[in-house]
Length: 97
Image (cartoon, rainbow, N blue to C red; front, side):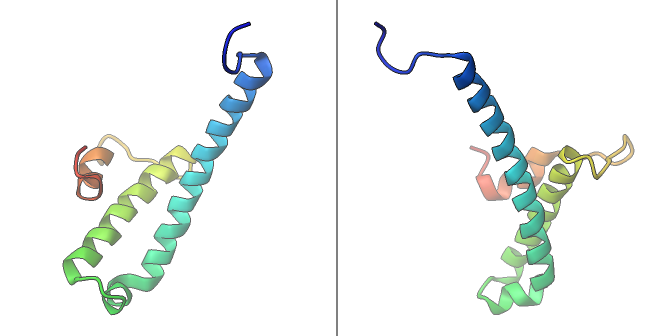
């Protein structure tokens, strides 16, 4: 008998489904959090202790993340005249690692 969990159709199906749900849930959370940040606005973030630059960065990056989430969710379109580079837009938050 082999060690560890042996793959079965049920295990593969469960993992595939769970990953898709996790992705969808993350996309929805990005959209909800972006709405929350937009409701706070720059002044609300500054009132919470963010510098003006950090507040702007946070709002800008999440606006871009929401654009990606919207495209993935099928509710946005970025045509060839509107170039969009998700990685370049989010480098300030993930440090390019």
